[in-house]
Image 1 (cartoon, rainbow, N blue to C red):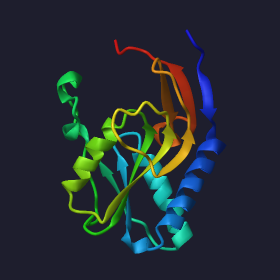
Image 2: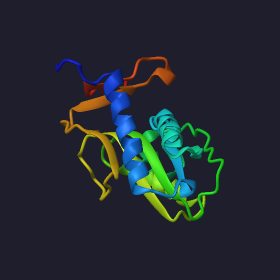
Image 3: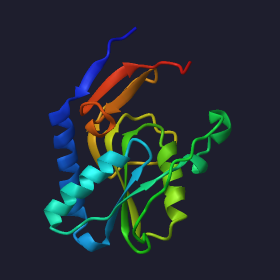
Length: 181
């Protein structure tokens, strides 16, 4: 079995988020028309951090929300019992540029579900995607607009993102795939 491999440490995570924030600011010059939405679970804290970085760059508060995609997934039958988390988007998405944020982009199915869930909130002007890690293996035609790091992986590997907000350190680790017991 392969060993765990650290892909990004705390400094690497912070650099990636700072770079993503600057790229978002360069591409979207109208700060008041941008809102960030973190995809439950992995994207929540990353979206909040990016929103704070953007607020510093633009000197304007950037709205931040959280979206749950559980009921919009195409694999509900295979997942069994689904625990629905709250969706809290305290701003109107109508006419805004929405930046969806997630930790790891893999096959694209979570992002597809997030697109569906976002459209249930209203009709944004556009939706962009920011991810900390893009590991490839897309099954759907989804491409991120902003990427912290591209890390091609094998199908028998997985990526774990641990953040200080969840009780760990900021660290991204490549792990061997482990079946749920």
